[in-house]
Image (cartoon, rainbow, N blue to C red; front, side, top):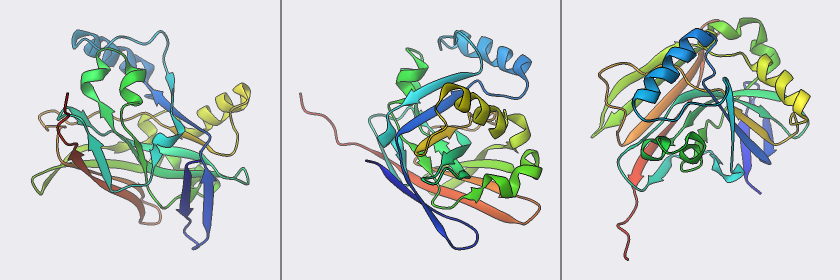
Length: 228
């Protein structure tokens, strides 16, 4: 079973034996903006979801705390997100995450593209209860690296996304709010003119009230050429 370990601000740790991973999609707070985004993606050949927001189950082993993501080709990229994690004792945790997605597969099916790469999570987390009162002020940023040079590709706040509480209630109604659940929030827009295809990604989830940040970073490494 895939096991994750998170360090909390007080130095204690929480272990999570991952049983399910759910990736939210088209999860912007403004569903009017989401509808416009769906139309833009349709012009690029990405099939529209049957409903928004969407929820895509992915294989539990794809939730990883890693500094290296192996890819089959050069058209994969990350997405800055927060992740809601249900610890073994049922406590709800919030952490930084990056959904590494196969963009070539995305035009054939979003669910397929989500299952072709890992959801990278930080090794640190906050208790959801500790930041609940200021969730919308939390910042979310991402940088893509190419040959050692980083460029900021995403910046925004959690107010742009549906809040964790929305997903908590939905999962509870479905009977899915169980220990070992990891829910990815969906992402914020990418900056225009920044190439998303690089050799590394870095994501930060920040709390302006305390100055604390949760971060992750990983290299994107091509696999060996296949034979046959």
